[in-house]
Image (cartoon, rainbow over the protein chains, first blue to last red):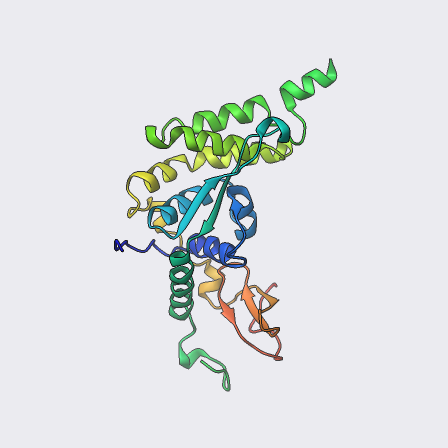
Length: 111
Length: 133
């Protein structure tokens, strides 16, 4: 498999991945992902483009009859099988990197 | 007449207004030619189902981030300075998260910060340190 670089794990990228990982089987379109991630409009598309570029996401046009539905087809995104594993691992790494140092943890809290 | 003005001018919830359509069409112009049509269609489709106020918010958001999208498509490894500077909110860096209690797939409870996504498994214990949550 072609080796691709992982995207930079900025906070918005983590929020988008978390939104997609909440139900990996569900396809979401850009605005839905923005709402689920709590990000403002326009912020998600650059992130989705990067994730799609590295192969973590795949997208497709909704299969509808625009005349019958009264609206154009939306672009739906979901994690690829590889992206699912890589996203989980990347989020785990990001969270562990941001975890409190041991000397700041309250007594009795497990690491 | 009023109905006609509403549908053509200020718009109805569900249908894009002319100005929101114009803004998102314009926003797709700086994108690379190979992606322009796709994103124009994607942005227009997303306007459907929104109220005019939401369309204004969405269209201005798309317009303001179009250069970041262009960069993501042409140089995926590079981030805009603003994006690169995006880090944890200050309060999260100071460990004052805004925790929300969530249930995991195994049925247990855990806490997750709504600002930065940090998680803590606290079991039956109370929320971790919290300010203003």
